[in-house]
Length: 258
Image 1 (tube, one colour):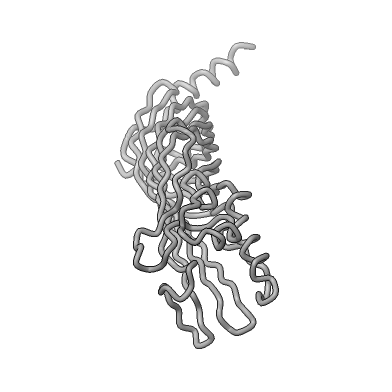
Image 2: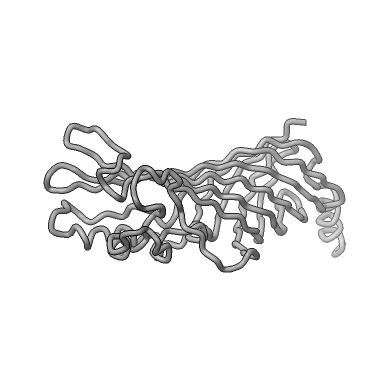
């Protein structure tokens, strides 16, 4: 009689593998970047214009929460499972400064993630646990415009800060997965993923490739150093690709199509 609960538990584990099939996936991710480095732009910009700025600004947030959509193929049997998933996610921010004369700057940032993830899982009843690993390609675009009292905006050369700056990061992610299987159609996964960079420690600046717009080519991180660099060569003062690498927490829902 004492063995009966254990036998029932083992039977439930062996019979409760995630159904194999194609899943439609949706999720929300909370992504951390290098907040200290990104915050420096707003801090130094606010210092430079402290006498004419209405309030301090934080142009580049150090973390984003954003949706993601994709698809996954899962194979399960005997309480064990494996999954291969692809997702695309997009995060945006929109911050603005205002000067006492009514002008200012508007900084719109966007990250676009393409993520491939492999899951290896075990299941006991409805509970699923395991590991996740995969690859991330993150594109970054930051648009800086001058704003005017009449509501118009300009990306022109009237202010050296203006421009459309781009960068990209490619790195691996490794982490853990826990989730809940709801019937044979729905899976609710939670992933905690850590970045693993294997492509060296060089930082590539976020760059404006339209050199005709102004004399600068990189997005500043230290605004004081940026203004003191007339030839636009001090890319050590720039926001870089690796500033957008960090920890990611994701909560999702997967629906089996067939």
